[in-house]
Length: 144
Length: 161
Image (tube, each protein chain N blue to C red):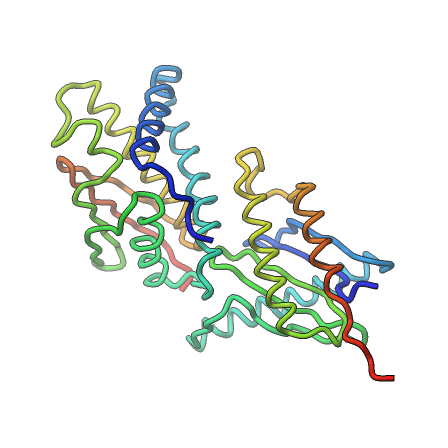
């Protein structure tokens, strides 16, 4: 079973552009989790603006922990945000690499001149590649 | 990912051809059409450039304008902008030999047709820059001003920070 439950990509005005879940999960539940985490993400960026603290990374780290999930965030200079809902034991480094790869996939899809700007992405390639990325992340082996 | 290398000359030839075509096909609405094209090109181009930067700019005026003058200018026009100055919140970006215009009529327009094409090129370029700025979180206008081969873009805008 994949250790990644959902990948979400939202636009500059928080419009949903891409949402994909993996494995046997309740989609609505995950949408709710992502929605809540998005508020945390916005707060995080705005706080930094206020205090003028320089954040040197697109990767925003852990946004929220619930009883079953951890939600991670990423923002680009163009205010596109990526959120990943993962199992608790997934390593930060794995998530960080995945975020960059998802951003690259999104840019490829966005570069298609037939893709209307600001609308959800319906690119078969992106869906397939994100799925491959997500299923490649597996839970670390537990000591028995 | 590094920008794809591409012969600068062929880009400019294609670009001029595209503008000529628009002008001939839609003489009345050429500027609007060209501006629309430029704007979405700016948006898409910056999205790809943003991939290469590991630090989010978060809409800070100085960071955004520096990004436009360096990274964006290099990707779009093949080199950095010549000069940047700021006066009372307005940014003036100058390019001493603007590559898109230099091939049309070196030194300045000679007749009405040339000056129409030149103003179309400048509208297109301004729209590309405007699209880039807007995707980095700035709302405003870019106004071109050409003296011979030198072009000055006046950026008036509201930045997020």
